[in-house]
Length: 104
Image (cartoon, rainbow, N blue to C red; front, side, top):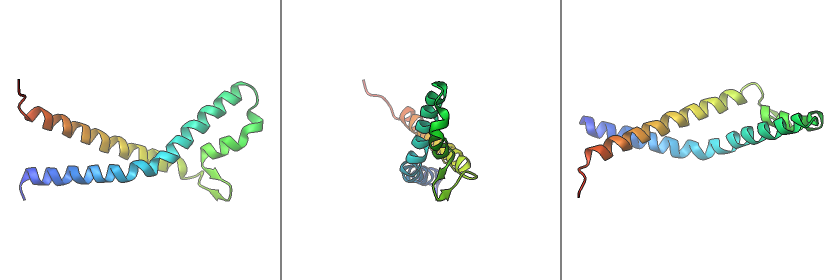
């Protein structure tokens, strides 16, 4: 297999992995961002004690399902993978677009 075919396969795999992981990571990342921001606003207003349930959601405590120990690590790992795959695809797109001749 030639190098260009290996690269093409590699970037197809990266794109496929990114396409699968992005929708899975959407809910936890949105939940973390929204609950953290809303809790901060509520806490600044002095009503933080009444919204401890919001902080529990932010930390990964979902009622009977308590993921507080691994939730931040899963969020971070998923986000780092999405950043890596996204930057890889972006750099690949930039390299391939520079190789194509422009027509006037």
